[in-house]
Length: 251
Ligand SMILES: C[S@@+](CC[C@H](N)C(=O)[O-])C[C@H]1O[C@@H](n2cnc3c(N)ncnc32)[C@H](O)[C@@H]1O
Image 1 (cartoon, rainbow, N blue to C red):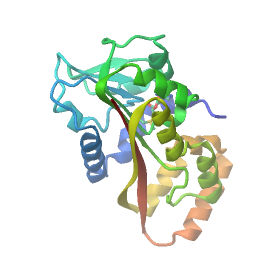
Image 2 (image 1 turned 180 degrees about the horizontal axis):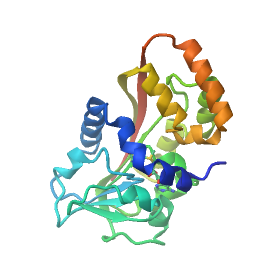
Image 3 (image 1 turned 180 degrees about the vertical axis):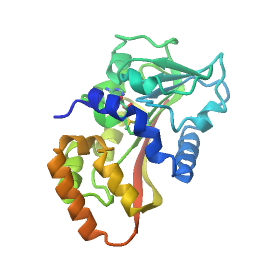
């Protein structure tokens, strides 16, 4: 991609959680869905890849312990620095690719689950990385990808929606890659309805909260905000936040 994602997350790290702080229902919904799709046993070893600040880990932390902590993998140290200071979380500064190839070792050789929540789009070789990670799963272990589908229903300006679609992996392609890695695959869309104050939304866009927005100049974003204002005149905006859930289970 054209933007420097490390720089993007460094800049965003301090405001990332504040963006979602007024959406506790969404955070709880997502944490529940991840729990439901992973269905981990107590003591299961879980690695959250592209964990960021660990915003969606609350439910998984219920089954983690200091002896079996969640391994929070992220190449951005500023994001990892914002993880809660909790013995049930172990930060590891690495990319998905470095874990998949073994270039950087996890504290354990194999895990019961890898979770990617809105991080898979940063991975360049998705099939190769998923294959490498599948080799590091225990029997019955799972890889869960939660990813925005290419076509968003967000109230963004058209150029941003189009550019986002061009850079986002197709859920069916990720499902096929898991299948090729000899995993048993499920693939569906889960939907959460969002109502947001229009001015708050516009502030998020101005702050370039999505990485795709940081590929636009300030002038382009300002023009995009005018387009949003025209298209969404009401003080509140409602839209469907849709997520692809793609899961592979090792035989
Ligand atoms: C949109 S954030 C998602 C953070 C967290 N999972 C969440 O949902 O709140 C994407 C994260 O992926 C990380 N990332 C970027 N490139 C990566 C890579 N190659 N492998 C793993 N994570 C990566 C970023 O540093 C960032 O923290």
